[in-house]
Image (tube, rainbow, N blue to C red; front, side):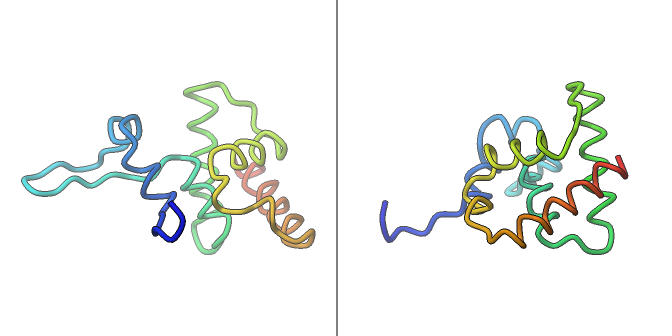
Length: 111
């Protein structure tokens, strides 16, 4: 609804499937849930400092091992566009898209 705050990361995180797959800790009055793989990769690509490249590479390796995903720049970019559309990647300037593609290629090389 227009004018209502919306947090796409939160919405995806509390999705029933994500809660089932990514609950880290459950205690009385507390449930700690990890974000989905796609949001983890998308947010880490934006920041891309310190351990982010290796973290992304670990997620990509998991995707390969568990789902046999053959990661390419195009496959990863399309995955993020479909799963993390609210990030507005499609609205980025050409130089921002190229910079992100370089980060994607780098992370894939590490995987």
